Length: 102
Image (cartoon, rainbow, N blue to C red; front, side, top):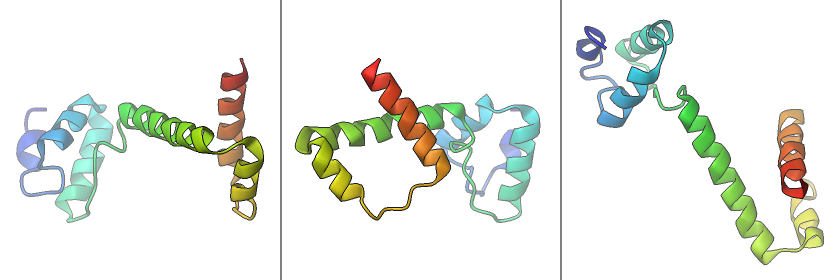
């Protein structure tokens, strides 16, 4: 990371896990994030990191597995009734359903 390492000192990116995630980013993305941090914005490199998205997906599936352990399909439908779901969330749910039934 070279000079970028000195640039993050005293910012929200000045932590080991953040530095690890920063090192994985493309230089252009890393520099933009560092500039935000230097301006006092509270940012994280872990959200930009693709591994973070994989981790979130795994956590979501684990939460669904807990629901499946304690609920049948009808109970789940009742629990979800009235909860607004965006098109993106519905698309992700469809992918999960397809994966489970495959």
